[in-house]
Length: 322
Image (cartoon, rainbow, N blue to C red):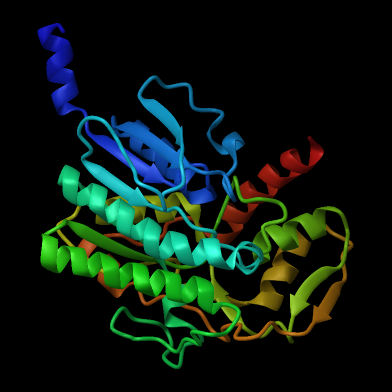
């Protein structure tokens, strides 16, 4: 190997992303490649989509098909591990409850073992769902949550809560450089049309003039962060000296009914609103307190809801026309 090539390899950081073919994982792959990293993407494609990575034509990117609940073997050094493998939408984790629990427990254990062996910095994709149906509003990182462990959503909530506990145990007892990000509702290109979450559901319904399904009265609130903002916040945490947990999300709160009406207006849709019963344990409010991210990471979201939705709607128009 030539001296220049060897020097370049030493300077190039190598990152592993589990769940790389997912919505957020694929955007992280783009971001890290743009930063000059060599990226290994890992996915078993239970919910991930190869199409999310099809645009990458970079020799520094490698895609590995693997289930992270089984032993993970990566040759050579790994500097950063971003653990994003998990079903994430209610449709997915209600259809795949055992797989969701296994990836949060066994999968997290395997990935942490690799981080320990490689002396890698490890970022856990946790979630606002660890707060459950919160009794504190907005939600701060020191809030312990109000979660029903045996309810239908418990398979996802408890998988992530266990993943946080396992990650902190590895930090305390094995000195692994662990970071925990609690991700709030995120949207943008590469979400699936039949994802089951509010924004893809409303956009797909609005574009086809079908009734827009609102659960309950639509007065439950959510806060939506555009994926580019989220990825920037995640990477600032990854490359910081801070362990977290840190909330990463957009504090701009709105009701689900307001969201449906906004999307209907932006798409010039003829859709009507169709009300259905509220799912069990559906959180009534969801809004991140991002004071910690602002202070420690100098991060706050920059993309307005209107601009983010415009980009996302255009993506869905093209996707649905294929």
